[in-house]
Every structure is written in C-alpha cells, then in structure tokens.
Image (cartoon, rainbow, N blue to C red; front, side):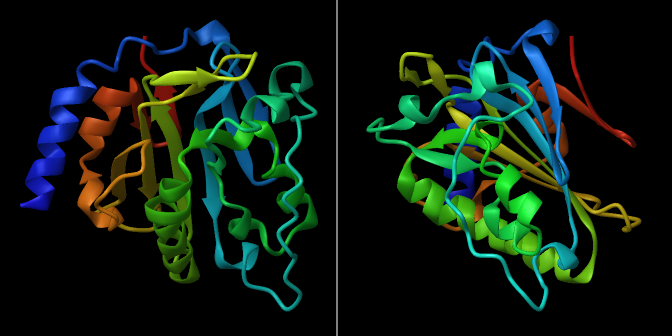
Length: 226
C-alpha cells in the first residue's frame, strides 16, 4: 500500500516540477579524484554527481576522521563560495557523495566537502532515508564495484543571497557494471522530511529517472537530453 501511495505521489507532482532543467551552457564539469560534479551556475547546486565506489575507498587500516570542513570548490570558487547561504537556512549541506565513502583518502575527504558536492536537504531526510541508502551503497561495494549517479529535480525555494536552489526531489541511480542483469537500481525521493523512512519504498525504474531528470544513461555514463 505504501509503495502505491508513493508512486501516486510522485506521478502527480513530478509533472509540475520538470520545467527548470539547466541549459547546457549553465553546467560546469568539475572533475575530482573520486567524483565528478556537473554543477549548475544558475542553481548553485550540482545537477548530477557521479562517482565510483569500491571497498578500498572506505575500508582500510587507518581510517580518516570526518573533517566537516565545508568550502568552495577551488575549480569554481566564484560560484561555490556558499557557506553563508546555508547558514541559518534550516537546511543541511547534503552530500551527494558521502564523506563516509572517502574514509581512506585525505584528498577524497577534503574534496567531498566542496560545495560542488552539496545540495540543500532537510536534516531528517539527510540523516535518515538518504543516509540509509548511502550505507547500502557501501554494503554493495564491499562485494562489487558500483558507479553511482545522484541528482535533483525541480525547485521549492532558494536560500541565501546567491539563490541556492532547494530541489523538489533528489534521485539516485546505482549502476552495477559487473552484472549481466539487473544492472541499475534507481530511487526518487521528495527533498523533504519524509514520513516513510525505508529507502526501498522509493524505488522506481531507470526509464522513469531518465524521463523525470532529463538525462539518458549510456554504456559510458549519461548525457543530458536536449
């Protein structure tokens, strides 16, 4: 019953949220050691963050502590100096690639705190359902390499003087490159303090993600649709 209600909710409201895709010239591709951010200059958030996750990235003899050193991305400082925008906004600086994924690399830990990897998220979503799925990604990666794509859809409001967009929805696609079947696992969440916590309740098809997010997945990764 919960699955059916969530699917109905998504179907009714997504139709109202698909008018704000960024234009190709608005996107800056920022490549870091462990993730690539496709950052919207107009929205001041990443439209997509892509990363590969393997167990050696978070399982090691000497784990690195979470730093919480949020800062501008040195590849695009003029558009990612957003600390003040998030302050007292009521929203978390929500990681697209989790800090816990970078527990074995000082560089990776530092880079994942760039604002090019952040999206405004309500705390109970960021520290609840979203975090639960991040933990599941690491469970998968213990046994097989995965490639993860995260992104956002729509707009509910903006925060700060820079107008950082708070998206209506967050989505995630987990790609299992070594599998012959069931290669994609896809989720779509309201960017809100959702009442239904289990992330499994928000699973949808790859085709739905492509339609709603305005992108198309390929053997090489993905492309933005015109």
